[in-house]
Length: 484
Ligand SMILES: Cc1cc2nc3c(=O)[nH]c(=O)nc-3n(C[C@H](O)[C@H](O)[C@H](O)COP(=O)(O)OP(=O)(O)OC[C@H]3O[C@@H](n4cnc5c(N)ncnc54)[C@H](O)[C@@H]3O)c2cc1C
Image (tube, rainbow, N blue to C red; front, side):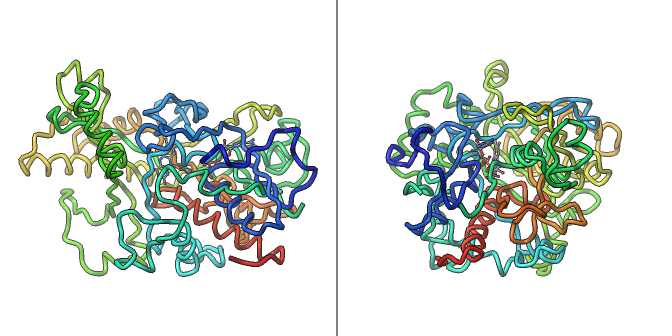
């Protein structure tokens, strides 16, 4: 299928295209598909990475960065993190047609309406949930909801079903003069703007970069969820580690995936999004009231998340002769803000990335809650009679210092970098307006995870696809083209 995709050799490129999309990733592929729906319109997608679309690269488990050879990924080291024991973090992103959606964990979580209503309240006119829901629906074919069950909420005709549709499904015909749209992702889009002379004047001057437009927000509001992987042991028969020890189990699950499209190779992880305020002081869950379930109320935006996965370092499992189980405990609401800056003027060089994890006091407080909720989760499973065992030292609930030290030492990226070219009023260091146009530069938009106003209480891929869908519609409107 991929062989029929329009990949042009450099010498075959035309001199002019209507639209040039820089970055054929999650957002770029969606935009390319939508903008090229009119045969008269020419679209060039410039992608820095590979174009692998083999079976392994489409399987959600085997193509996941941590389970693959990493040939579709690019890893940038962060600067040492002051509030995390000066550790550096490996910031992974996809470098392939389809982008990070080709190597991510394929978890789909849109977030709740209150999230987007906040965007709208903060000046992003046209982005309230009621106004953007249709873009989520347009993009997806929900696999686990029959259309009749949630016809307004889930789509049944979109291109996005699972990993297999991440790139080829979106780009169908060879289809760039009217606009340039940056979709190179949250680390590369600000880098490209900075290299082009669009960014904070002092930084551009310091690096000897040309100055086209002083835009202090470029690369200045980077955010990311951070989390703590907590390792436990479970019986080997319940752990995916058995797949490495038993050929029969491996074959069984491969056959299950091939025939039914289900099982651990399809969806190895589940995510539980939680409102931490619903725990009382002893960290037992308080029964939710009906108003706690109102998705329109900002206080109901979840702020933490647990992702249990029946997997841990196989070497450790073998040494301990046990099955591995990891609870990826993660924050969903972060206040700390970091930066993407130029290391040099060489476009091949990675940017200098400082996530500034745990800089905000509120993030450290939330991290403590997360540590406690995770322990409660483990206790509840044990109380229910399941042999789950915490397999590493855990800090005392009463000892804030020990808890903070645990977090500093264990915290890790959740790979949800966003907001490095955020949509916000320019006086609030926004980079793009509500139509995703870069302030002060004509015919240039940004439409990827970098424009998300703040790191959402969601998994960003769904949000990115929604943004690309809406961007395509706005580009068409602004250029007098027929809508869908
Ligand atoms: C390991 C991992 C697991 C994740 N798991 C999940 C998950 O389960 N669910 C979820 O919702 N989100 C997940 N995410 C995050 C999510 O996938 C990303 O936020 C989202 O895909 C970003 O989309 P994007 O379009 O902004 O950027 P990308 O998809 O990264 O696309 C950017 C594209 O631009 C290209 N590019 C970069 N520089 C240039 C250049 N100079 N010229 C041309 N092309 C360039 C890149 O090669 C890439 O293809 C995960 C991320 C990682 C790394």
